[in-house]
Amino acid sequence: MHLTTRTAALAVSAIAPLIVSAPAPAPAPAPAPTPVSVHRGAQPAGSYTYRGTVQAVNALTGSFDLIIGVGMSLRLVHISTSPTTLLAASGASLRLAGLKPGDVVRADCRNTPTGLVASRIERVEVPRP
Amino acid sequence: MRPGDAIRGLTRDERTAFARGKAVFDSAFTPHTGLGPLFNADGCGECHEAPAAGGHGDEVEVHATAFRGGVCDPLIQEGGPVIQQHTTPALKQALGIDQEPFPPSATARAMRTSPAIFGRGLLDLVPDSAILAYADLEDRNHDGVRGRPNRFVDGRIGRFGRKAFVPRLREFNAGAFVAEMGITNPDQPTEETIGGKPIPAGVDSTADPEIDREALDRADDFVRFLAAPTPAKLGKDGRRGRDLFSQIGCATCHIPTLRTGDSPVPALHRREFAAYTDLLLHDMGPDLADICLGRAAPADFRTEPLLDLRDAEHFLHDGRAATPEQAIELHGGEAAGARDRFKALTPAERAALITFLKSL
Image (cartoon, rainbow over all chains, first blue to last red; front, side, top):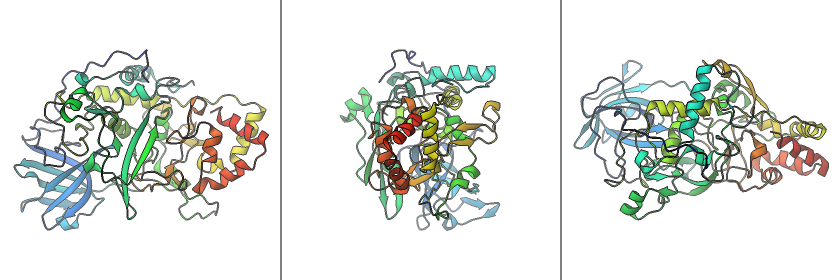
């Protein structure tokens, strides 16, 4: 039910984009990848930084799915690795197969014609009481 | 404190933030200002409205997830667990739909009422250690109650939502802007998909994020600073009911008083408050079971905080109970013992307990 006393609609003007890069194409059928936890510094066009929770790892294809988002609004992004992708955990190097569902990672990615490719992945330690 | 009041002890700046946040909370969005293309409501205040902004609502929304082999799938690839019930005219024109399609992989549907959100800033600050202290996974005290925390996808302890899936109030608020209204924001700058499919071109021309950080911060301030209404003064019957509430075991889960941890806001810092929750999940029995979420199985629900119960017009997570008595009688699972003890009370004792509940 609407409140009759509700204030007039909030005038929301165009907001400065959160990132400077162009939107990534949608890797059908998944939603268009868009960073949620982005690095605030200037990023090259087509670059994204995600922080999220690993949902699945496919070591054979060298890719993984990352859950990002807040509250009840979650998104899934598919990220591939390349031979030059750096993986690290607590300063030590890591293999992709060493990532497990539930791990929290920060992934620096660039958009390519085949989708997102990570240049660096860092497993983040999250206190879990 | 009356419903809708700010917590006591705020600074002048914080009171100003509360007032400014209320303006955002009360705003009605349009497609031009970011609404949709999928949405449940056109503003926070459409659902959280009675008896004041932040209060109860009469809307019932639809959630869905899949529970297979003991694992919960929030169906992110099919549009997520919130199934929006409205579309903007542009989306309807493009796809011919009036609501988000129900996810084909779902194994359960849940109905969810809009709760009053008073006192949520206090619940946000209850330390994890305090929540865990009430947990009793092994039922070591043999009372039949086994509270356990839910956890978000990243492992953090959840507090918010009927399944306690969301850890922090800020996250719940930012997510609700998108999941409930289709308003993208700096914390969630991407729109909901249409059952997992991208939004058709030209349907949503408003640039993302559709509200800026200041607007999100203001709305968050308003919710964070909403006071838990002061319980009404109890007479003899109410005091008797309060005693019975503890004696028959209601207070085992509906912990009367919680204490916040550290906060930069003095009015929220290490405050005791009437909460009537343990923020834990409890198995409520098969009759109430609906969806899973996080580590909450279909029958698991977070103990509902009994705040502003006096203004509630329907009860339980889906509003199926018309009175507090019905709600108690529908408790099952871990709450069956307390329910049975309630049913065994004399009519006068039951009336006293209800008098107490209606004072909250």
